Length: 258
Image 1 (cartoon, helix red, strand yellow):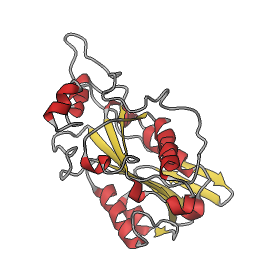
Image 2 (tube, helix red, strand yellow):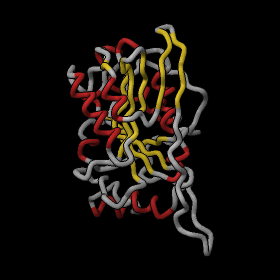
Image 3 (cartoon, rainbow, N blue to C red):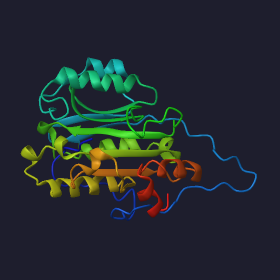
Image 4 (tube, rainbow, N blue to C red):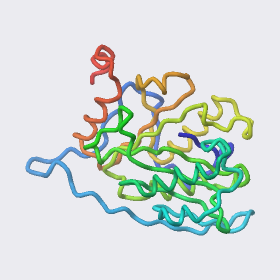
């Protein structure tokens, strides 16, 4: 996962409140059912979000749940390069696959038929520890990128609003992994720690908290990030099931109360 829209982006206020700094466990703030109440309430339906944003680069259209056919029709701006390793067709194919996947949500920033920014939200891969086939309430913010040619225009903030203002995710758990090898340090001029702080600030506005885990890809670099968004209506049962996956080392889990 990566976030690449420049240095500090200004948001429309804090969406997540105060952000703890890497607890071994986090206090449950979701919903515990009353006696006789169903353990899982019916989820809200996905909500379509579209907005035309006026910028110095012209009008940019922000849209969530972008249909796969539309994603496929867009040209990829040449400033989109980090995940695709300068292979725009590869990037388009990945986004089309997300849009077509069950639960997939592609948020796009579009300028005159070009894709200039995107977010991909999907269920975790079953090849990862988070990818449990019956955990349809667990999602991953898999990627966020803004073209090098369209930074400092608030696109990352606007796309995050398009993703997380959707009440569909209010009873869901969403994870995101931010690895240093996906960060555009060269273009932004930021150090690893500066880039890390920037993304913690951005994601924290929308309810993501940094979490500790023994997942090897996360622990490979001390600057890597693992963050979690626990929906305000997420049940205690979902909270417990997710928490049990944070550590696979039995001794570590016992020490941390899992």
